[in-house]
Length: 306
Image (tube, rainbow, N blue to C red):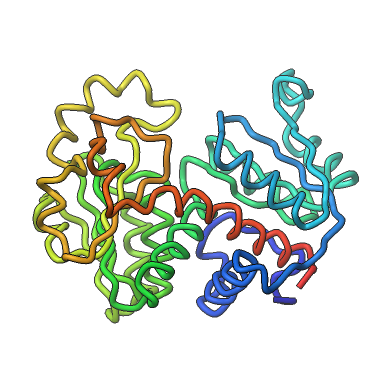
C-alpha cells in the first residue's frame, strides 16, 4: 500500500478500485489478527460535529497501531475564536502526522488539505462519509463472500452517506439503488460520477418507489431522515419519509438472504423499527465495529506502516 503513503482521503473516489479492494483486504486481516502493523505516530481529531462511533473508532484504531491521539475540540482551540483555517492547518502540520476532520462544508476539508502536507482524512462532511462506506462495504463482503452483483438499497435522505455508498458500491461492482422522496435525491453530479465508474457493469438506480428499490435486494440500508444541522426540519420531513421506513413489511420484499444496515445513531420508530434493527437480519453492530478495522487499515496505509 505504498501508493497511499502521505495521501489524503477526502472522497471515496480518491482511491483507485484496486486501492479500495486492498484496503478492505487489509482491514479483514487486521480484524482477524493476522496482520498487526505498528505505527508510532500522532493522529489529530478536529471535529466540529458530535461523534460517538467516528471519534471512538479512530481513537482505538490509532492506539492499537501503537500511536497517540489528540482531540482537537474546536471549543478549546483557537478555531472557535476565528483563527483562519489555513493558519490552523499549517500549524497542526508541524505537530501531527495525520488528521481526521469532521465538519460541515467539504470545502473546509479541501482548504485544510491544500495547506497541510500530512494526510487529511474526511471523517464526515455534508458531502461525503468515506470512512463509513469502507466499513459498509467490508460488512457486505463478510456477509455474502463477494461484492460484485450484490444489490444494496439505500432508503431515505440522499445525503453524505448515500453519496459515498454510490461511489464505493460502483467501484466494487455492487448494484446501488437509492430510494428517496423527489426533493431529497442525492446530488446529480455524484450520481453521474457513480454511473461513470460503474460503466454499465452494475446498476445505479435513483427512484422514488421504495418497493421497487427493495425488491430482490440483498442489503437494506438507512440513515436518519434529518442529519446534524437539519434538526429543525425533522418534523416536516417525517411525513414525507414515512414510506421509506425500514420495517418488517418492507423487508418482506427483499431477497430471502437480505441483511439490514444502519450507520447509526438510529431514531427508532422513524427511519427504522425496533423489529428491523434488533431482528436476525440486522448486521448493524458488525457494521459499527468494522469502522475501527477499516480506519485502522486506512491509517496504517497513509502513514506508511504497510
